[in-house]
Image 1: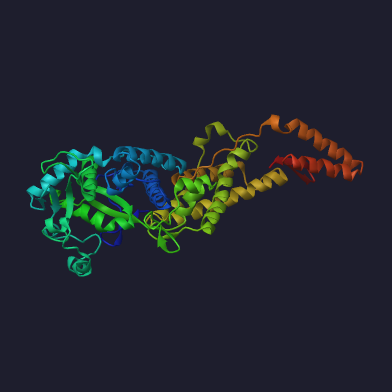
Image 2: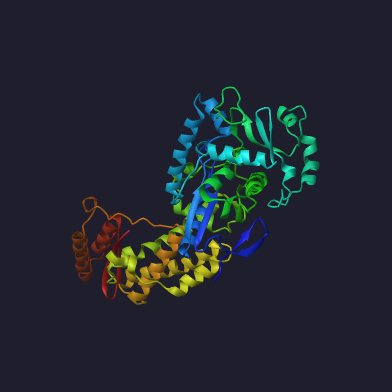
Length: 484
């Protein structure tokens, strides 16, 4: 079962082969920290979190780097409005990012480089580009000479002649930056300092880096010249990732990444969810409304990761219902394991069903087909839910305890690969309701009333217990009960 994945660079699905056997170097273009994260960010972070988890599950050692863009006009604008500083704004929203991702069950990356902490690497890369004839200074700015890189456009499929035709009517020839460029397609690697903005010393004068050079430098500093997977949203293919390739490969002469992977956007009524359009829902707003974080993960994972996914109340409701099914299966062992004679203290050593693991892996190996993998989880969860209902109503199971143990452990294992975790419910506080002994006494009183044909008293006791959250199940073997 070979893992294959779609490579944006080659526009085809390819077998996955790493630079170094058994190891994966993976970089994800993270967020610009000027506001709270919305569901578009949640989708990207969940997708790449699960890709990383799955690679680890099938035996790879993964080094996962995710950056923060903490120099940007949007951050500076917010700082100006708030009479604050760029650093203070960035720090506040980085803290908020970690809070939101923790609620979604996102595993932390191995490292989170920030542009402001990579200034030496950024300047070194610009200097090398300049020495190789791919960059030129202009009045304190430094620009990348796009036409010097013969392969420009290979990721996005964009051709300079087509871009020229589409751009000609939008260029402001009086713009100062346009006048400093040798070619309209050239882009900034370094920007000269402006009044009131933070700046760093450099060989070209005080200033700050352009956006694209930051990621090229952070990839190189943390992971080397060539990595295995470079990931990000589809909206970054052009120009950001295209420019990264041009910058990095012009210096190293090596591929920046073997595989370029891009997640689809979250849409609202067919439009990309974004802050600029004002149609976004923040992660914390959604979760604070009572939506289960695991339902959000399920919402994301039910769609193929490269396709758009439309955010609606109906979609979240469907994901919530689906999560309830999987959650019931995940809680099965904690609810019924003791009754089935399981040793819950050593549950990590429980056997698993290799056939289901193989089905899951065979499906997901096809370009990270997580919706197909979820189908295996739902089968296991529904079977465990059925067995749980049989235990409640009949006091026994149709399947052997050992077989149920394998099914449950398999579900828990596969759910963990997808980052789906159910919290064990707290035991009811005996001081706030009837104790087990009191319930049994009430059931005995009800039985005596039934024998005496005092059905009104029998019904009263049943209703009294129901009001306390206790459901009774009568059968030929006697009366069983459970807390709702």
